[in-house]
Length: 355
Figure 1 (cartoon, rainbow, N blue to C red):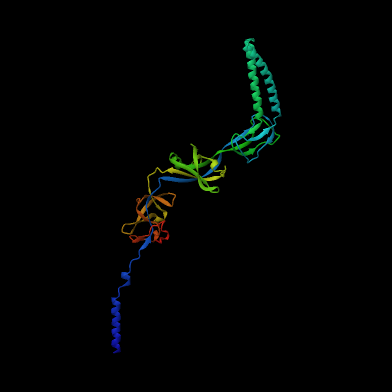
Figure 2 (tube, one colour):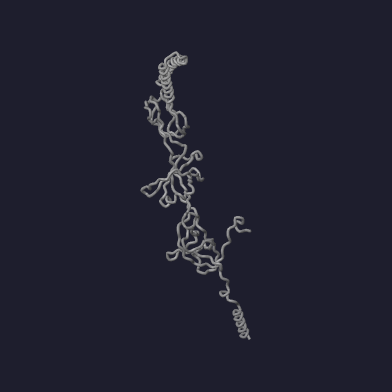
């Protein structure tokens, strides 16, 4: 009886196992979630960055128009001076005496000339005497003006606002007319020098804007204006640009500072598609991307890449079309015709996908 019960129990277990569905046959297929992005058109503008250097626009030599010993120097190297400010002063003794002599001679000739002119008006003097008196008055008038100008020229004034770069003489030293007493850096405007390659030089007519940034001063870029372009390349096949900078709006900038110059130029080449760099993977020395299909599967497609666009993307010469969908994450884990599920797009109004 016990044997029969055991046999029935064994048969029951076998029937029970036969009736259970197989896990391996009916288990739902795992679908990988992937991030996809549309293929975009490359920008119509090229953005290039080059190192540049701020330089003073002009360096002005300051010199007296008259000679003499220097009585006083009012500035030192590095001082800022305004246009018209006195930089140095000569000893005025000789020029004061010269002016007094010219003034005395003028007064004498003027008195005589006035008497002759009065007689001429009464027609009581010969015309020749009148002409001599008028000519003499003009001459001493010019001499008096020259004496006043020379006395005024004993003060050396800055013709423009700027910084004293160098002082070449000491007080009490004798200087001749025209000898530079000091040099002045004109801060009316600065120049930024930058060198560009041939590839950009030939597109210079398509340049849209120039700007630069000096990180130690500010992260905000400041605009530049094109002054000139050299017509001859250097030994390195680079062409020099002179760009204007208004220092009044950026007082912390100074000559000698290096800057990062940004040049924006119209891209006149054929418009290409571009994809994120993360979408690319290599097999056998060739580049591929995964194309997301309408049936939620992915297809591997070979592409020919171009240049980097500067925003984490690369242009595609051949292989994809604008608005096609490509996988941009986990590309090395996918297989041909694998079914995938796109990740939901990020929403700025639903941070974290809580809604």
